[in-house]
Image (cartoon, rainbow, N blue to C red; front, top):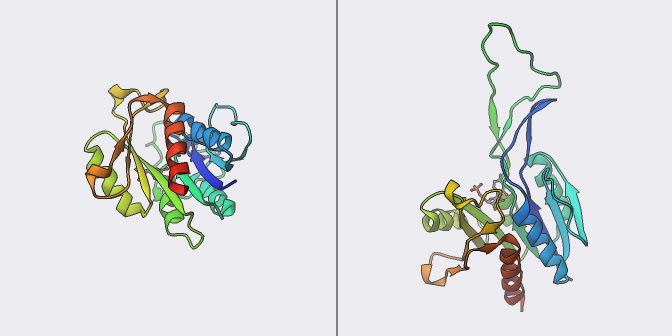
Length: 215
Ligand code: C5P
């Protein structure tokens, strides 16, 4: 019966009306978390960037494209007791993305693309006046996993960081499996590391941990 807000997928940021900047997030982990929380009885709002996955049953799906739209949809979904930010939000958008298609000039230089910072949704939710009781983020790192994840926990102001290694040889980004450590503070001995398993398995483990937290 608790309300859970989950972000998932990539955001895409327009360059002009026909081109955009994107990333390789599949949405598999975020969608699996939304599905699992719903199956455990939560009321789930899933705010997702463009993915090819079907909507999990029994969740309210809000489809967005850009990080700014994702933030707006998340804030509109509050209040919620739980927020899990699993989306791979683009760090930047294109400043002054035009309404006309950029034209290639024969022999001319490529057009400059100026970037501007996107809002950090996890950080905003963590410091929101209607802050969810439990705010969970991900740290996808290719090195110094524990150190970077712990720094992220502090910087973002969330309660848990699910740290995962996305080095190319792990096949995690876009793949079906994930290996997670749940980090909840500076004390490394309190880390909870789960065996490498399917993203559905990770979603199950996280949901069980969330239920334990609230009980
Ligand atoms: O800073 P970094 O992108 O590594 O942080 C990852 C975590 O922060 C993820 O939980 C992601 O969903 C969230 N995030 C966000 N908004 C951003 C950037 C990241 O919610 N603009």
